[in-house]
Length: 462
Image (cartoon, rainbow, N blue to C red; front, side, top):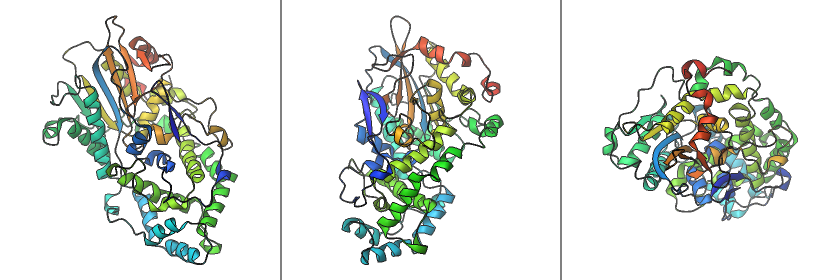
C-alpha cells in the first residue's frame, strides 16, 4: 500500500493489482523487512506506521501568506479492544487453537516458515492486555497524540506557542475516556505536562450533537437498517471463502479444528492491536513484530482491509444514500470551522481543538468532497478497487486528524490549507496542484451552514 504525492499533496492508492487469488502460502512474516500490512489495519492502524511509511512532515509553507488561525478535529489515540472483541481475543488465546497449530507444524501439515512457527509456539498473552482496560487509551496512544501536537507546534509556532491562555485556545472532547485522555495528551504536547494542568476544557453537554451527531439523529438511524448488507454479502462471497480455505491450509487446520471468518477476524485483531500498542515505542519503520500477523499473507490483509472499508463507505462515507443528511450531521463542526476561518477579530481564539471519533473526520471529508471514488464499493468489485481513494487505514487510523490552517494574504481572500494526518489534501474547487484553497471557495462549500441553527438543522436532509 502506498501514498502517492502530487507535489506533496496527499492522494491515496493501494499497490495491489490482484485479489486473494494472489495469496502466497509460503509468505514469512518474521523475515519480511517491509511488512506492508502494518498500513492495512483499517481503523486499528497505528498512526506512526502511516507517518513513517510516508515520511510525513508538515509543510507550513504550502502558502506564501502568514499562518494566523488553526482548527483541529482529531480522533483519539490507540485504544485497547472494546469488551466484546477483548473477550473473543482472550477466549481464543486460552483455547486449544495455538496448540493445534503447533501440533500441525510438527506433523508437517502447515506452510508456516520456521521463524513464524517459533514465534507462534512461544507466544503468550501480553501482560499489558488486561481486560480491565477495555476501550481505554493505551500509552502508545497518548504518545502519538503528544507527538502530533509537538510537530504542529513546531511548524506553526506563531499560532501554537508554548504558553496556554483560554483567550487563545479552545479545547473540547466528548464524554468518553479515550477522547478525554487524548485531548489532554494533545494539550501536554503543546504546553508540557505541568502547564497543561491549567488548560480549561469545554464542558461536555448531555446531548452532544456537536461532536457525536450520529448518536442524536433518529432520522439517520432509520436509514441504517441496510448498512451491513453489502459487507455481509461480501463476507459470504467467493473471495472470503477462498481466504478461509487458504488460512486453514496454511495453519494445517482440518475437520473440527477448522476456523471460520469470525475466528479469523479475531486472529486479525490480535495482529492489529499488538502492532498498534507497540508501534510508537519502536524506532523501526515496520514497528515491533506482532506474532499473529504470521497467519496472514499480504493478499489476505488487503482483503480484510476491504471488508472494513466496505463498511465505512456505506455507513459514514459516499455510500450513504442520503448524502445530504450525512453532510448536515456535521453542520456544527462545519459552521464552527467557517466562523473561525472568517473571523478577523484579534480577541478571538487562534486555535480551536476538538477530539472525537473516526466517523466525524470521515463525515467532514465527505462534506468537503475529498477522497471520492468514481465507482461505489459493493460486494462484487473488490478487484476493481485496488487503487481506491477511500482507505480507512490511511484516512482514519488511530490519532488521525484533520487540521485546517488559515493564511492571511494581502488581497483579503485568505488561503486555507486542509491537512489530513499532517499532509495537505485536495479539495474540489481548490488548487489541484498544491492543495491551497481560497476562503471564498470554502464559504461556497459551506454556504448553507453559515446562518442556520445547527442544533435544529443537523438531523435533517434540507
